[in-house]
Length: 396
Ligand code: PMP
Image (cartoon, rainbow, N blue to C red; front, top):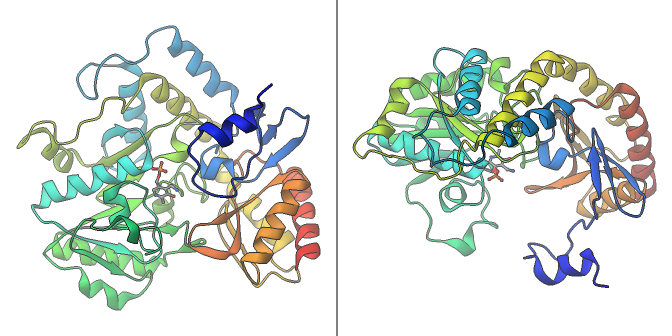
């Protein structure tokens, strides 16, 4: 009999020579189960997706109810679909008055594309400012603004006139001029290995954007939906973007993204030309129903409010260990820096053997990534950290 592993290797397009390769039978809460009976504690959440855990019962129930009503009906923006409009209204309720109009898409990359197009259309400009070591997705536009050459170079030519600046370097702000359509920033850089903007920097950036008329875009695809201890990371700063970009933790495990702006800015997508952004599946009713339930769970279970304490416990248990050279966290986005990639790889492999899923970062080869479901308990953190500590001791 051909195994799923053989089918995976034969027929699934591979993007690496060493995929993690866990075979999954079922996932529940913070646990992933393989067919051989092994149970893994998932400290990655499908890369910051399963913030409410795998298969949260309320998310599953919302999906079930929507399955009995309708699936896809029409391309985005034409029919009135209850899950879509209720989700947009809920997002408006938890966001400030500047961010009341939501465009639903399918993924983080598409949300970034939408935000870039919106800012070009609204300002009539085309220069874009982004950051070194930033990650914004895998499509041509989002690749163009990526802050790392290795993943970009083979795909040139990309978008012209991209200006890259350095996080928290206020001198770089001079490069934002009245020729720029937008500045796109991850308030907490994820793939760079968890580097947070300083409050002073974000404030100065906001001022510079307002001064020059460049729209300020926050990519909160990784930092959103409670992960940093606020519902959205920008709420921990006294700064509001012109466009907020979301995905990952938005869908409770189903694919959905969004770019959100003011009614005024967003209205530029409806004329000259009409249909300024088109998507067939964006705002899929099942995904929206799941997303609304997921957001309600985050709010009702006060998951964001618990992040600070849980993050502190991780720090207490891991940051001082021998071999740990640096420890950075923004809520439950955590980077544990070791000597080099060899040590990182060893620790990740040892963790996996012992049933704990951790991962690496795209642009930081010497750090281990930890981003568990926000539902993880203190007891689970304690037992996960004792395994990680043992792996670090063995590897370093
Ligand atoms: N922006 C950020 C900050 C991300 O972390 C990611 C995904 N890692 C993306 C954009 C792209 O999202 P997607 O993979 O859903 O296209």
